[in-house]
Image (cartoon, rainbow, N blue to C red):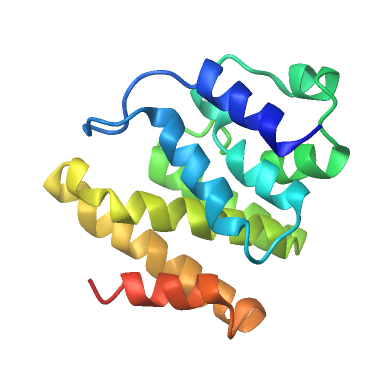
Length: 164
């Protein structure tokens, strides 16, 4: 299953606007997939594009399997998808990051870094009390990715964002 199929799925199934901004929610997913393109293969980019598909639509893992997405893409999506049974959203996020670290899957860590970078760029759409939390999340991921991504353009971009 290719990247173009994933783009169509995201556009068709992730609806609405983004966190108080006048842009489609699906645009965030497209940006995350695009950020990965210069450093990762098509499966990682596809998983990055689909990183919110379970959380933000009615798409299921079974549907993704039936559409022919690879087991690697499905594993990456699972790693970067939070556990909805956890009551508080910030707890969900930190537990998801812990799950990624425990797995040792650095591609999933890169997807989550790109996701958080784009969320950080759009933090002005968040309530003022949530903006420092977004900075903390990006700082956390920069710290966690530094040992495995040192010298990468993605890490440099993330570090530069923290100066804004």
